[in-house]
Length: 242
Image (cartoon, rainbow, N blue to C red):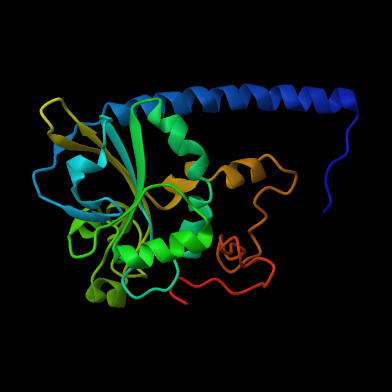
């Protein structure tokens, strides 16, 4: 890897110039976050049922004693013996934040279409502890933009991420947020997909500060290097349903 070499004084001048740009980015990100929170909300009137280790729950039940719910749409569908490696990469970051989110009135939970028994088996294999519910048999994943029909996948219809990305799988990742008021009414406040999920990945945030960055430009696709955390030593090829 070749790179420009400078004196300490030259490096410091370049670093201060970059710092000014970083501050601009931080302010722009804060403004974008405020605009996100200012989006109008949509009342969720449809009944959804979720299978959990504590029985069948409604969407409102998933909040627990919090007024905010963040759902990660994890790619694990009926019949898959293991979850998507990219979703698993993100999920490795979840356990550390659930306790802290709870202190800010937020419940965090993963939801997948796979039956609960299949979710629990994979969760045990991965050693995860974050809450994870099954939406098996409901329209939840389809209604929130992460489940697609065979016709859409065959035609590669641009239906993902608000119609901006062609669909290449029956299931794709996403994140949705909800608010519950004192009357128990639930509102959908936000959803994000594709690169909008990058912010969840602490590993990527650290790599972005490393000398070589994410170093993915020579790969067939950006996350081709990612494995489930118990597969790196065996160099097993990534698979969503292997």
